[in-house]
Image (cartoon, rainbow, N blue to C red; front, side, top):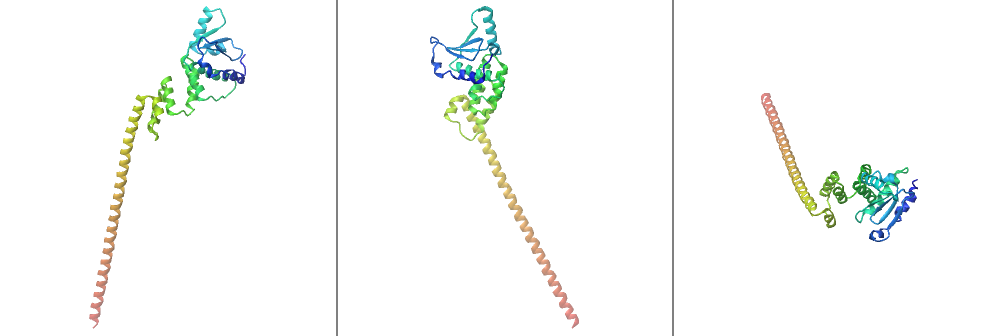
Length: 258
């Protein structure tokens, strides 16, 4: 029987990060997730959990089968992880137990990264897909997406994050450069330089095009003014000629009358 989410979360959260300094010679830390039927020992921490949850991880399922075949003692399997291992499993159990109850539940990015790490390490495709999908909606910074892309082979994440770093106006900070590494930092720097060069060329072309447009408009304006002036002069000349002709005709008529 699986306990309520609140009690499960309390059991998981009762684990203190101070325990990560324990050595294998120290008494193990025990986290009881409620009515468990198997123990999972991660480094020097024991999770009392449920076999059906661990069986969803293909690699753990094989270990459990081997244990059942050759070991008649209490069901217990042991895995060894790095310093993040216990915290990763603790976060993963938050996701696994919450999914047994009606949701939806919202998990923060560190929890989802942990569940993605454990799902990847122990071959649980559905949990891996779930974690990736939820992380994809988390609006993670570009640098963090690059680090996750490297760790979990998420090429599309790496590509989009790279382009984001190239396109943004703010320069890459020293901390970001350390996190993504020298090689990628130099690649981003070259891409930014090339982008700025192309941007400068485009801006220069726009400037020249604008100058050409203004020049054409000025030439057309002067042409219109010249045409209007010539037309006006022609009209005035025609008017003057007509007036002179009329005057001359009037003078000739006056002479004839005399």
